[in-house]
Image 1 (cartoon, rainbow, N blue to C red):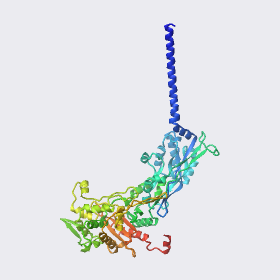
Image 2 (image 1 turned 60 degrees about the vertical axis):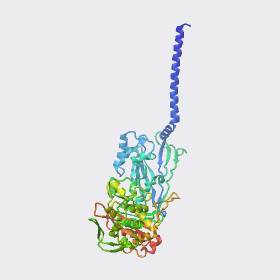
Image 3 (image 1 turned 90 degrees about the vertical axis):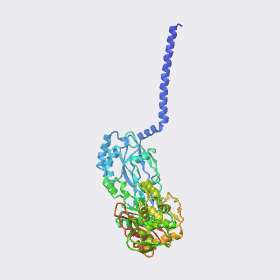
Image 4 (image 1 turned 180 degrees about the vertical axis):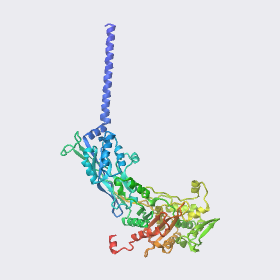
Length: 595
């Protein structure tokens, strides 16, 4: 065989090899692609195939019910009608706008928000998205009538949150509303249109209350119509799992009396009622309040702005304020425990004392020689100025912190402030200046840089009532039939002789001192009024803190009215009404039978 023939055969073999390699590579690409599609991307394509042959409806899980301590319903669910959209049915922005134009003439809501929701529907997402919650039957009927003009839009029944007592305990319960874009970024398991807890218990325990949604998969034909319903596999149900119930420590009757007392005071105010032995919060209210039910329907901008202007969402029981004279028991306890003042000591009181050329005035010019009990009962500033001259801010702070000031109370609600319990180092760090002797005098009467919350004051007066422990406040009693074990009380070692002086002063305050207006015949109450000067204003916060019965305390009440005047004339009567409800004062036999 000559060389030319051999060369030709070699070329033919080379071309054949190249061709085989190309065929092999092509086959590998096809096999690889098939492997990727059928193995790695099986679920995705299977889901897409399912969506093209099925119509899926999400079954919203009913939220868990919230009860008071006696199993009265505070938050439950009712059936409502929602408008849902199937995003994969909208191919263009114009199609979305066409649907919006029709819906906006039917649904009486904020059309700007409706437009935003429709335009922001995720492209090609096959699962439905709720775009309007809790519409009226009339609106639903009109949507059904115009269904042919609204492709991709449907209505369905959903459980919606319902608060049977309207604004009752709103600052504790909170409310639910549509999830916003910021929340979606941190909660990828949720979808646009979902309703989530926004405030109070509803927000803090949203994951427990909300449960797990189910779904219904209905088989459809190529025209999108349901197949024969007699076919056993034409509709598949995955039931939703309801959320877990929560029982609160709140007492419905006491809570009602608190809210009524706040409304009747016509002040911006709050009150908290606590069991001093256990730390259970029996009532917590802030006024102005709001009706959580308004958030289950499309909320108008005017309504939202009105709530904001009234500062209705502020839970004032958890905000910090200057305490004024309700702080004086801490000052007195600090001086006694530091042995700077003797239990039997008496002070000369007058209209003012002077520190250098600075005048420190009292609230009255009446002069006399007062015991510690009388100084506390009549809230004599000049006595406490003199006590303040004997102690340091660190000594006041030591006992304030022990009793619960300057730290969270333990209550299971968001937004609680810690307040400020200052000392020399705090001022140096914060203001870059030294602590002056006059600062201690103001500190001694509950002014200065001091800030506390009503919840903290409830702990402080609970500790005085108990004498040996500071309760950790809590508002959750039970979650899904399981008792929630609260944190143990913080142990407190107080000299009984010193404690006796303070308790006697607090009883005297109600019996014949500044708190006499809150006296109730037949019930021994121990308490303290406070009129705290508001910096930059000539007004005072009205405070009242008390426990009863003094001989065996069952409840502690703290009431605060912002910039409202004297504690004995504003906050005191609020607390008195609550005490009267708790102890069933002036109730008829018929009313008592209902309790």
